[in-house]
Image (tube, one colour):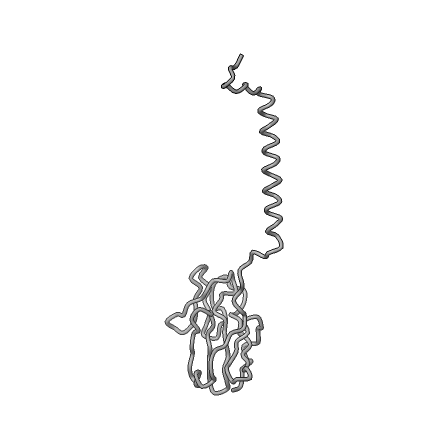
Length: 156
């Protein structure tokens, strides 16, 4: 028989019953906290698919410029300005420039000529050409969501 200062021993069945109730209570509270977070989206803001290049005078005819951080190549010639995506059409790796002026995928070995046409590797199609337009203030805009044909040129 326990003394006044000693607690009464708890039976195994009582302990398991209490543990079950505590587990259920913790699960319910955790679920309610999780549901309280649902109304607020937990996604990161995406970088806009449309971005400004600069003035047309920044790209004189005969230049070939890669835009750092945007994975886009700007080709300017006498006809106008074109923008080519530097994202491989196989699995989305970033292609790099080769010594011959073409491009190669460092991940899976696809090779592309300077116009983006595949010459080797598993890439199923050419690198994509992107729409170029001009805003009201005169700066050039590239839209990475809009693909155009390789022959389409923005006339400045």
